[in-house]
Length: 334
Image (cartoon, rainbow, N blue to C red; front, side):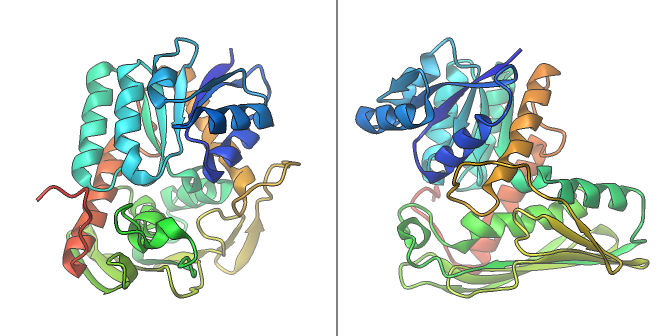
C-alpha cells in the first residue's frame, strides 16, 4: 500500500522532498496534495510536480481525508502552527528540522501527537544516511572502544540567505545548521542528556547568532564539542574517538557519503535521482522518506531512530546554548 503524502509549503526544501518521493515506486509513495499560503504558488508547484490537488491554505490540506502524512517544509517559526493543524486533522507528520524554535514549542507538538495517538517525527535526514547507520552499528559493536570525545563542525557563509540572518524568523547558525552538529553528538552518545553545557558565541549585527562553539560533558567522563557559523567556512566534518580508534564523517557531514573508520575509507553512493535538486546530496532524502513509510506500516507513533524524547532533548540543549550566549527570539516566551 502506498502512503499518501501532503506537502505543506512550496519552498526549495519541499521541492526537493517531492522530487525525491516521486523517484520511489508509486506503489509505496504518492504525493496527493500540496498547500501554500498563496493558491497560485500551490498550483504552480502542483503543475511542476504533477500533484492532483493544490490548496491555498494549510488548513485545507490538514482537512483533506486523502492525505495520510503531512510533510512540513515551512520555515521553523511556522512549524508549530502547521504541525498542530495537521495533527488536529488526524495526519501523521514529518516536520523539518529544527522542529521548533524552542523547547516549549517542541513539547507542545509532542504532547499533541501523543494525546491524539499520531505519528510525529523531526526530519533529521542525516540519521538515515547509510554512513550514519554504519556508524551506529560500529558504536553498538564497541569497535571504537570506550568513547572519549566527539566533535562536529558546520559553517558556511549564509549571510546572503535572508532567512539565515533574519531575527524575526529565528535565524542564525544554531537552529539552522547547529542542529546537525548536536544531533551527531547526541547520536554518538545514545541520546543521553549531557551533564554540563558551556558555550561561547558571537552575535551577528541583526541579533541572530553568528558563530558559536559549545562544549558538552557526558556521563562517564566523555566529552564533545561543536562549532557552527553562518559567516565562516568550516571543515564541515565530524568525528568520534575512543580507546580503540576513531571514526570520521567526511564533508558534507550533514548529508554524508564517506566514513573513515580507523583510517579505512568507506563510501556509500547516493541513490540516483535524475532531476536537478536545490540542496547538496538532496537525493538522500529518500532514506528518511522510506523510514517514515516503515514506521507507519508498523503502526509506530514515533521513530526509533529519532525518538520524540530526543527531539525534546536537542531543543533543550539548543535553548540552553542560546541562553548562555544571550540570543533570544520573538517566539521565546518571557
